[in-house]
Image 1: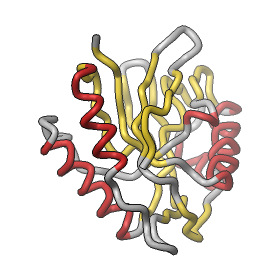
Image 2: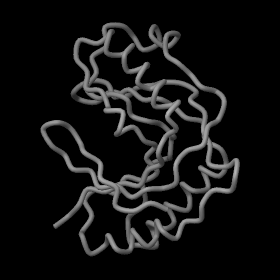
Image 3: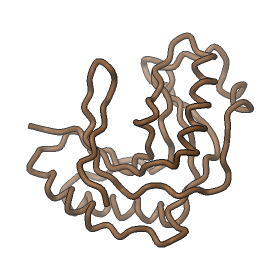
Image 4: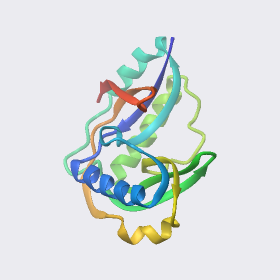
Length: 180
């Protein structure tokens, strides 16, 4: 049986609070919107998709083998917001400016996945946190941007974590499989 997996970093509570405030602005200005639950906010390093159970042990070992960040490294700032169209509406996101250590971790994860037999990600890594899906905004995002909170002072992110995503009628539920 296959499992839907991804590798992500946790966010500091200050970012989650600000992102929930941004979601409130979006919700107040949307005819339709599906917001991300606070407990599901994260920075995805690598989406793996459907993975056979026999590959999970190797993924767990890889995650456990990642070195922790040095003190003062593994940080990001909340620097802006954006969107991209999908057939059901807009996907809205918060953009992060990550330090060198986070970007090196992204490269290490990508190399590790290649070594474990996963195909390349196929797109450039753009650090962002998905805040909402299927949004139909009443105003252009540019008009809402001045009301959206930022946090330009970098804060520490969590260590890489392997998650399973279980989709259900209440939305996705993320289960921690392994932490670095």
